[in-house]
Image (cartoon, rainbow, N blue to C red; front, side, top):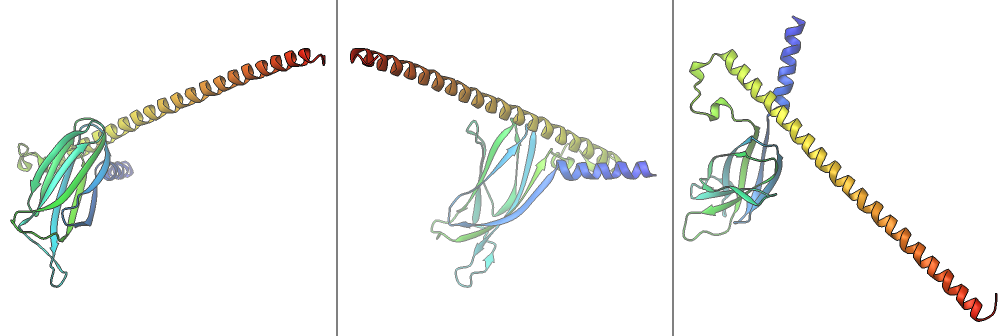
Length: 220
């Protein structure tokens, strides 16, 4: 009984650590763009659910405006590779996967479909879920064809795979940081040796020059 409870606790911890959600809201002034930067391992799926509300100029209350859309632009900053550049409705969902590990920028700004639209304040609610795509995001997999236990096992396998990818990504980042530190230390050591050599040559030249000066003046 204790072993089963410990296994359930371990599975729960893995579920909480491997796939996580960021829920927040922020304000957009007019068409000003707002960006988020995330470090993602390879083959990681990001699901974003958003809802926008526009400020009413008369009373300042935030209400839903169907004509106010959201422009979504996702880019891999390391390679300047554009992943997503779409215009969504006032509320919707976007999904993308990281082909390579690195930093990704998620930029959003409000756009209007009307001809004459004044710059207004928009409150944008967004939920970002990081992890591998689940059966809910894959239409070819039906819940009816799998039992509840099989679904849970499949989710746990995906979450364990997420943990392994995250660990591998952290190892790669640590190796990159170690190589950068070693290269910096090597440059510092080379520069120190060069300074010592230059100072030695300068001292030798000064001693030789002073000796010739004293001999010329018949001081020695």
